[in-house]
Image (cartoon, rainbow, N blue to C red; front, side):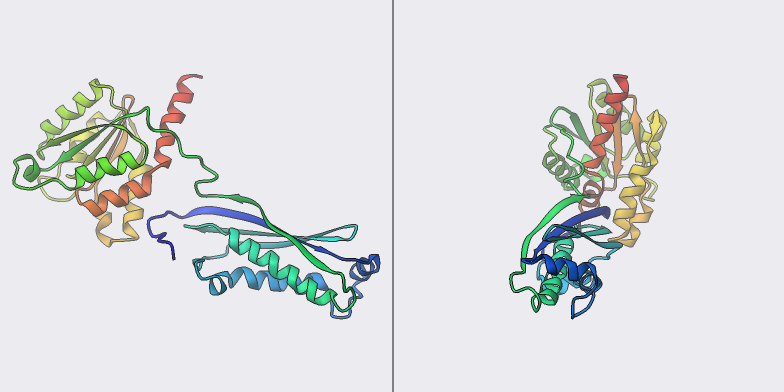
Length: 303
């Protein structure tokens, strides 16, 4: 199965359809009059569609089990066609397109089975996905290649050369994967003055996105939040709340990070922990959606 552990929960919806074509107008008359010998085709098909939605991952090997938050089965009759529409919602890390199509296909099969004794020309046609929402398809990724970014590693041991940096270099690579191309890289010791001086230099150089790694923990030398907070002109607490919650689902000590975030003038500043895994989780939790803040800010500035 595809690895989705890095994905975040979002509301996802899908609508699928299937069509049953009958060959005799009398078949439609019997359906509408609830005279089909095997019973009410719509109620039987609805029950089977709901069961099929829930059992999709049991029957289709690469589908992940997921919580079904809502499911609906609708029918319309047009001339000799019976149209089935199945809608499924979930709040999860992957979509429900296959679940909706599976439900529609099972409903179609049930109707076919119930009608074939009275109509030898009945056919199943056009099982298809009509619509999907949620995930990347509903929220096009904002472009980031025009943004200037910087990474600052806050570490005494990296600064004095006794330890090689892993998190900062990784952070640069991950930001490049998000479409950022112009990325500066700096290392400073865990000292408030050094951190603040580098922050000010980045602001003067027109950096749009500044990401710190390191110094957000609980030791006496972890001073990145204290250094950055006085410069924040507009706090965005939800950013680091999201990062901490994402990390908390994977490692319980993520709650101990004291990272802060917000705008310093026109520059967005993030403060991530110093471990490579925490950097990976932080980027996975926040990107690419965090890049929308630049679109929002630019749109408002043009009003």
